[in-house]
Image 1 (cartoon, rainbow, N blue to C red):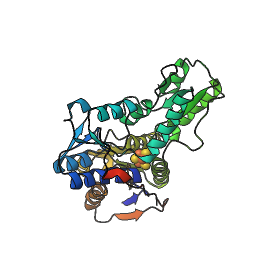
Image 2: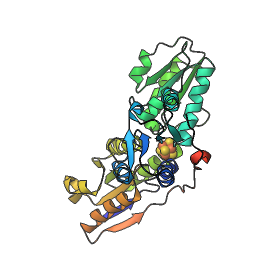
Image 3: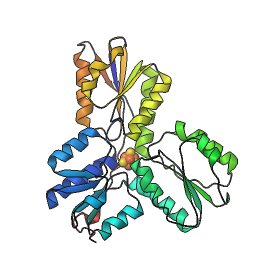
Image 4: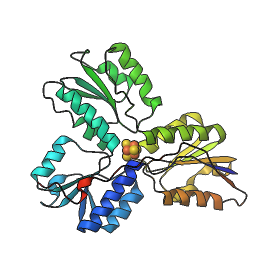
Length: 316
Ligand code: SF4
């Protein structure tokens, strides 16, 4: 059997930075360290950090005054940020700089009296944080997920309207929605550079390349990871045998694995390399005649700096 490995796969620069921030904070300040929501959407990362003394928390009201609080890579709303300062929590912001880019666009729309439309997944922490950058009480930001939602919109002034998207969606998902929006609101302003981030785009290009040569695909990532899910959705539409798994433990449950001649393996931007390796090893151990091939792909050299004030904490 041929095993093809997508390139790139796994951790992106924003996820590496967020995890580094938590580890440095632990070393610098000791436990416990609180993180608002999961730092990134991966069960293994979360379990590992919990074992080191990190407490993941959705309700900042329950965090003791004066504690260290890290905002996750997904970002947070202005309201929660303000509440954390009022509670005298010591804040470290691990929001990915590419999520911050979208925050700035929403903030600009809010200050400039534009209404805004965000294409995103409801209840996802990134979406909630991005919606929470819009503070203009006289105007509105709308969250949409589908063409059906576009038809329900009641925009007050279509000439003052801006569009943003969640960073981890796919062009397959957003393009038909954007096309419909342009038809109804031709003056809508969209960002010069796509809000879908480089890591999401590169992993989607890589999985499409895998689809050309593999008759099955395994996406390694947690079920609630948005970019892992987008990879899975892309494969699901194209081939019969594709699955999203959280770890190598799920491999024995994949019934079609014995039937296929080739397997493409990819992983979402929050999946640790150790887990991807375990998946590759477990599949490889099933058959000694496997041929493993690393695909040629886009080189990623992006690195995000750590926050300068990691030691000089913002205190309430
Ligand atoms: Fe940042 Fe994209 Fe990685 Fe999310 S997936 S943390 S937006 S680089």
